[in-house]
Length: 350
Ligand code: PEP
Ligand code: MN
Image (cartoon, rainbow, N blue to C red; front, side, top):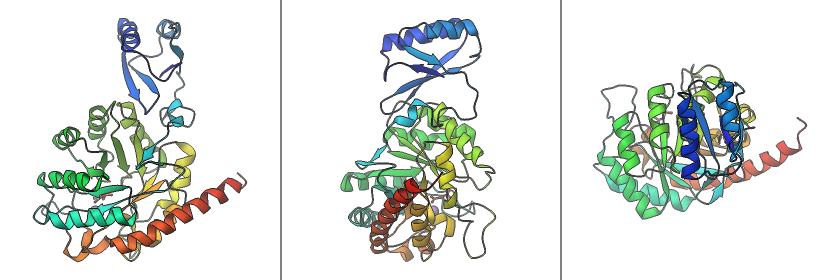
């Protein structure tokens, strides 16, 4: 890991760095935060002469060779100092809400436009809308690229930034082209390292964000953080971690609620934590409880399935989407709980 002594290097400095590393058969990959750039060395970074020569460059602070599992996302990385803004709110200080339909029904786009507007009025900061859908059964509706246009139109109409799930390279490319603001990697793909690599690389050096859900197959928390680190290491450090319930399920809930891992994640990494209460408990009437619990656990925000007419929705919406009326009340309460939780936590002893 190469840490420069200033936020940005000039193109000439980057190419000097790349040329020098190239002489040793090592590649230099920029990792661009909102204000700070750092560089990963891909290849053998243990060569002392290479390290000395890089550290000899007047614009380099140091080469960090400490081998820890996640260097980029750890609190002592310069990236930890970046401010992350969503809808003008600073993550870590303000609590943010992403809301919208599980699935966009391309045959009935007006439901999505209505939901998008209502989410905005309820106080949502980002709009979610599933274009392509992983499903429990491959024979269920798997979404359609036609819905991408509807998502973009809703962004245009509301001014809200949008988040949608991508599952394979073609979808990633389409979303990059459409300048989708946040790429969701779902629970089923959170361990699909090729996809993480592709998303990291294709969104590198942009301000696009990546929301990584926790896979139901992830064991220890480090496995989750390492997957997020891999996206950052492939060029995009704007990653956010999303607990969304895991297995084995708790009787009556869709999955086993795991918003409680938030303080542990925050202790190990600076990456923002956005909890998904919808998929963990899986029923509209339980979702507000899980969402408020996420705020109490210190999450930076939530992503909540919301629909104006859940019963007419697709995918998960009929059973787990809340209405914008509930969302509005919930946002007020989550913000209050998050603020109180931060204050009490700051006063807590260790
Ligand atoms: C979703 O967000 O609609 C979804 C399918 O999420 P997950 O990957 O968490 O199941
Ligand atoms: Mn869903």
